[in-house]
Length: 348
Ligand code: AHG
Ligand code: MN
Ligand code: MN
Ligand code: MN
Image 1 (cartoon, rainbow, N blue to C red):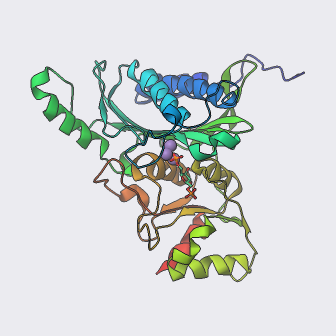
Image 2 (tube, rainbow, N blue to C red):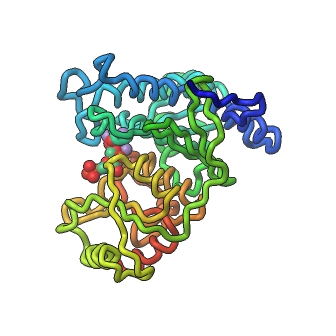
Image 3 (tube, rainbow, N blue to C red):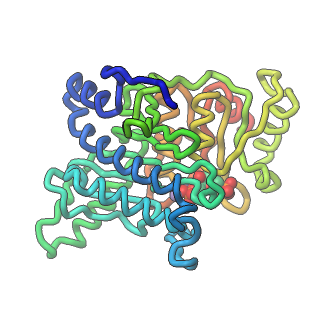
């Protein structure tokens, strides 16, 4: 039996946010958002862990339900999206929600003090769900730039346009970002621009407990994480870089190992803790790669930079990029500062 007895002083996520908001006024609003996000993540963790039992594996509607990305939706893609929208909607703090599983940003009528915009990937790595391999939820929070409260139907289109503009913000505008990884442990990692902290769900008390305070990415690692099946279509600079670190001819002289699980959340979490480099490059077939800027690359870049790492398209810092479309893709390389810098040099 689990003998760990949590003293009453266990630093739960709820208590952490209470203390942060007492220290800093601006975190007060975020406290309500983080509280609703953690409830949503606990619900999704619960569904994911019993997917095979409750017949929640497999495709939405028995197959054929395709999202705007042209990806076939899993049942849990849709259910996770609904859970997050519902949990966030009732905070009353959000005017707009953008999601991988929503064609267009959703105007939140329930918002009475709509100050924030939430962007999220409700279930990342969902192709892995039927094999019970790690998946995750990725989220980012922006402040609304233009109020897009709906006064009456007359200006609904105007409001919709405004709310689209509210979602198209660069990563540098993020006020908070994080992910929840559903793996051998359920771990919620996030930043509010003041460092990165990780909380592990303790099912015996149903609380996220601080387990990874002030995460710092090692300056250099020995793991690279790309889908090498695409390497014939990669830029030659990238091919040369990967060959070099494989054969110990890179800057550090070490022979790197390869780890790639095909769920961004799992691959990034390992990179954050162990160091090294994760990437989804652009290639001849898909010049912008596969990862979406708004709710995958930008939130993860905020976290990695806040943990002392680096994140780039290979040509520019991802956090600088102003999205033009909600679902636009961007080549993504992130992880240990020295590894990412070495990669950038090889792409020049
Ligand atoms: P999602 O499941 O949210 O659509 O994201 C899948 C992404 C990301 O999680 C992962 O890094 C990448 O797809 C893997 O793509 P490949 O299978 O093409 O390597
Ligand atoms: Mn998807
Ligand atoms: Mn994803
Ligand atoms: Mn997804």
